Length: 227
Image 1 (tube, one colour):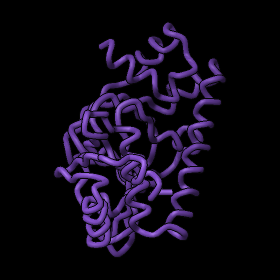
Image 2 (cartoon, rainbow, N blue to C red; image 1 turned 90 degrees about the vertical axis):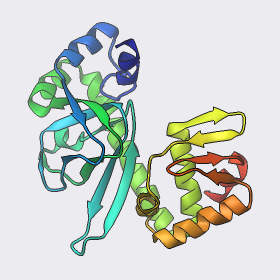
Image 3 (cartoon, rainbow, N blue to C red; image 1 turned 135 degrees about the vertical axis):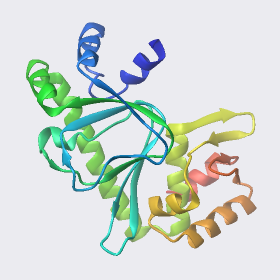
């Protein structure tokens, strides 16, 4: 439980609270468990809850009318999603799917609004989170226009490494849990093109591929390629 508490306190809902306030808010939240591949909610569903991830990873994605999928983000422990429903209740703008078995906390809109009114500083943190999300969206759009696929792949791997990587004697080990198709969806390119970029990086000695993980052996060069 102490480790879970540490994870929860990283979420924007909790960062502005003292220990007593955080404990009080957590008692209002419900536990949710979801198995790998399970769908928490679908694009177009009514959104009434905000979620904080305790364990595992989830992906947020959208799909087009012809079945093509776009992966918006990969989220892990301490990260929050679904917050748009707090300020603008309505249909979900993406589908949330478990990449691994996951454990979450959920809080309904009706329970959170009175809490926000009594603790306005929390609203500021949530608004900062939304602003950060908008910046990332704008940046992603810019990357699609101005960056080539290898550059987007390098940038995505470094972002995953920053959030999920672990330093080892050999480099930065990133267990991202994504298939090659999902990684391609994340950077907005075909799987073949992404595989070619990964093979090129491996050939240069910048990384080593390991199933749904990657060992980044030359962080400096890969980071530079992603800029």
